[in-house]
Every structure is written in C-alpha cells, then in structure tokens.
Amino acid sequence: GAVVSQHPSRVICKSGTSVKIECRSLDFQATTMFWYRQFPKQSLMLMATSNEGSKATYEQGVEKDKFLINHASLTLSTLTVTSAHPEDSSFYICSASLGQGVLIRGLFFGSGTQLSVL
Amino acid sequence: AQTVTQSQPEMSVQEAETVTLSCTYDTSESDYYLFWYKQPPSRQMILVIRQEAYKQQNATENRFSVNFQKAAKSFSLKISDSQLGDAAMYFCAHSIYQGGSEKLVFGKGTKLTVNP
Image (cartoon, each protein chain N blue to C red):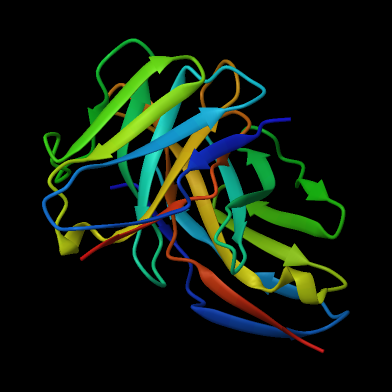
C-alpha cells in the first residue's frame, strides 16, 4: 500500500515552454500532497503544500506564477513549470501522506521527475 | 528556526558490520515525529523508520533501529548487519507545524557506502 506514482520520470524541453508533472496516489486518498525540489547531491527543498480543493501553500522564495500547483482530486496533484528556463532544471519529487494527522506515518514519495531545460 | 543537522556527510561500513548515522534537530514543539529516509541511486525516497516524540521506546524495524534522546534532540540511526543494498543517501527529518500546515524538514543527508 501507499504507492505514489509520478510522471513523467524524465523530461527535456526548450526554454520558454511549460511542463506538467503529475503525481497520483494509487491506493489511498491524499488530501495533502507536497512538492519538493532536489539539486544534485543536496537535500530536498519543500516548494509547496498542495491541498485538495484549495489553493496551494508556497514556501518563501518559491514563485507561485512559475510553479503552478493544482490538486483537483483526492488522488491527483499536478505541478506545472511555466515558461521554463535552464535554471529550472532540477529533480522534482512529489509526496503524499496517509490519513489523519498529516505526518503521523510519514510521507510516501513518487519516483521523481528529472527536468532538463535547454 | 526549525533545523535538522546531519554532521556526517559521508560514512562507510564493511558488509555485515554495524554503522550509526547521527542526526540532531532543533524544535520548539513538544509533539512531533522523526523519520529516517533512504535514497538509493534510483533516487526513490524510501521510509526506513519513524519515531513518535512522545514515545520513549526506541523504534526498531528489522536491522534498523534508532537511539532517540528527546532532551538532547538527538535521533541517530543504527544499521546492523549492513548489506550492499543499504548503500544510499540517508536523510533525517522531523515534522513541524508551520504556516497552518504540517510539513517535513530534512537534513542535508549522509552518504553511506557499504564495502564488500
């Protein structure tokens, strides 16, 4: 149980284009999902908290208009990198938690998306 | 500020031996959760073990156990009978309640090498 699916696993795009990344909880309902960014050999940096049916909460320094998050259902959250530029190249990881008390059982992570912007 | 410190950027261990990864954290909250995650070369984050701060008993999951010292805000991970498959980045994390929502704060990680 607690499987989180993330697609695509790798995407290469031209500068100026938009890229959408999907995150699905396959066997449970996730009212809250989290989007992280990870630079090579570094830790995970929380970008935003995605709440089903409401606006995402962004961390300080994360551009809301650049990283659009939609959590339209209890099993799907999407991250769209708009007008991507080479500095947006990174490894993006989504995660979800089980049940009540968001973090009681920890977070379960998708397999990540490596974004390369040319 | 809520922080997690992993003072060992890299560690190595011989196969079948025991290794301990250290983690300290800073929090003003009384109730929280602590976690160790493993990130192998595939980069898939895998939950290794969790600890509830209000429980004094140290958590154990097969070959993985923790030494939780709440007063010292220390949460080390012990891996017994190390296996080649244990080689990975290990991240310590604790839960915080900030800005109206719960989230995890991660340390910078420890790269564990297992030597045959």
